[in-house]
Length: 399
Ligand code: ATP
Ligand code: MG
Image 1 (cartoon, rainbow, N blue to C red):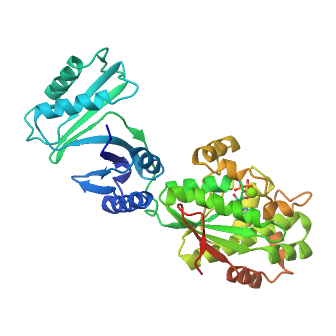
Image 2: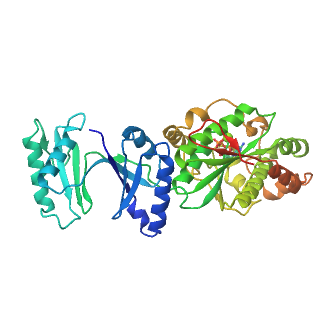
Image 3: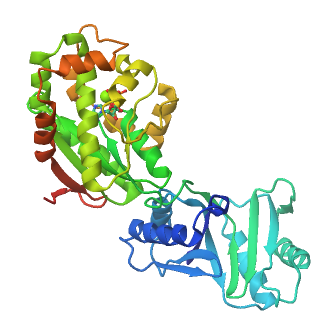
């Protein structure tokens, strides 16, 4: 049987202290965006329930899109019946059970009856439905504790919903319900994961990538575009700002002591990203920094790098081990792209022995020969901004 409806559940607990209406509106908007390739699908909101009418659109493709929408707790392919006749409900329930593949050995019926006009109570309905199914199938037993299939039947005022399966969603909050952050996106493993985790909390992100052509190739930039496109499967489109970083790196190398080059370079990245955040209305910066992972990610280093800006920095992977981060990278589909061997602007100029405990005063002193303000301004003015869409291979410049 082709399913005609999908019932969507979202984290009700998360809503207690939030504006529920706003949350739902954002979720509906994101679901529509995620399903824009399936124009037949209707999103229906009634009586505190959210469901989709598929109108012939392919269930399995829609399932894989819904699995990537933040804010969905779980969803179920659902049979929707607009009859309250006992016989009709029994036949529909039997049909739903027969469609389960592989056919189970045990099941349990769970009836909910929010529609109090319906004459049979939930307990009585459990027996009426369960008995009917048992009489019309073979080798099937009821197991109330650990059933293979939980047949859920909800009798509502607008009809009866039947489902035999629940698919786990991503959880989190709908993207766009918690404001915007600039994601410092390198071609590595950590920052795409950090971006995904930030989005999971409802934050819309714009990517910022520092590119040092010709020290780093067009392929290295393309890798970041590809990573961004993978992230858009979860967000439905994002901006990527590519910052020209060659001049700054050249000047740092010429004028600053070698062991401080990474620290000073990172301070520039922060200043420029903060400027872009202000320009584009973002209230935070997200990075893939993980404490202790490399020389530039010690506590002292974070302090010295962070001290040039006032904008809050979100570091969702700060406390995670590399294996944990890699696990998420695999799950969200960025890992294979992240490990492609293109050089990054940070790996091009690796000093022999970078300072592990840099100090803000020293960094400032070593930056003195540079015209910091001018360099930052030039970099910001030279930004190339790209709109990346999940469904097209072509990205287009919008400035
Ligand atoms: P990643 O895997 O994200 O590259 P990493 O372990 O290589 O992280 P670093 O190279 O020290 O760590 O970078 C720390 C963070 O700084 C990155 O997670 C990213 O947020 C930011 N960053 C580094 N290089 C760039 C770049 N070229 N453009 C934008 N952001 C960058
Ligand atoms: Mg890196």
